Image (cartoon, rainbow, N blue to C red; front, side, top):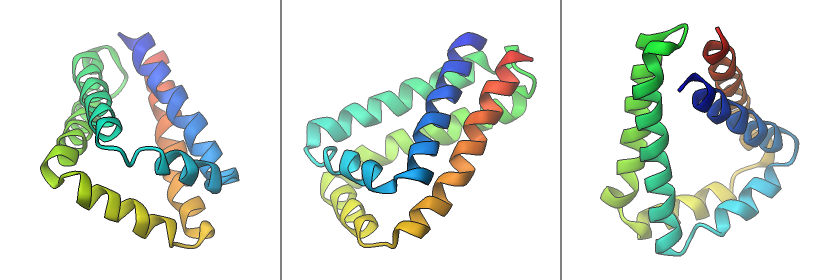
Length: 123
């Protein structure tokens, strides 16, 4: 299970680096999530990742932190169906109107979190 968590962390690092270096690429990708089916697929992906973090937590260097992170990811996955596609699309449109430098700043902690996941999974 640690290998899977390390893979999740590596994917987060890659997305985070793209967000820091080229946030417009991320914005174009998020724009593609507007159809409802894709939003629900994202929700299922978040639920799956959260469950993997919960189940894999005991095999990592920080089991309590990984459990908490798993719960947060699951809650984020549940937020999409609870809020509904219209509100999520409105948030995407709002996000597109923000300065790119703000988006870059927001991706720095995500990149660090991905790196932490990789490091903790390998310990």
